[in-house]
Length: 156
Image 1 (cartoon, rainbow, N blue to C red):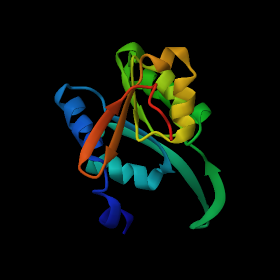
Image 2 (image 1 turned 90 degrees about the vertical axis):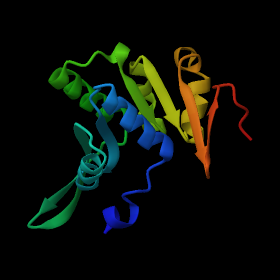
Image 3 (image 1 turned 30 degrees about the vertical axis):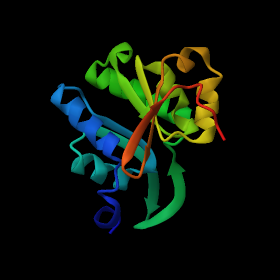
């Protein structure tokens, strides 16, 4: 039901970037804090090469309450290391897209960091981190327009 109702609710900028990366022959990998059973379906729908998400463990066919999270920087870093080894990825040539503070470390690792509709916490960290402040590209998508702003954007 989630896929049927929300599967197409992906920002235009995100859809365009997925298409562009695929046309360039890049590996497209989804790393998300959402449940892996949803991330897998979104990855399939949008043609990603691989994915990982938070694992919601089951016991006797029911959710156990145990979660192996993928929404924090520590676990995303482990996932990135795994994918780098699996696909021989050069992070200096890689792109990463993030919107929450859990994406901060991932954005710091790559040559082409992009924040899409960043949370106030992520934007504040970008603004105070010299290496990201000058390197990150920030995109805001609202209604029918996409804005690209610098990290010195005024926060109201």
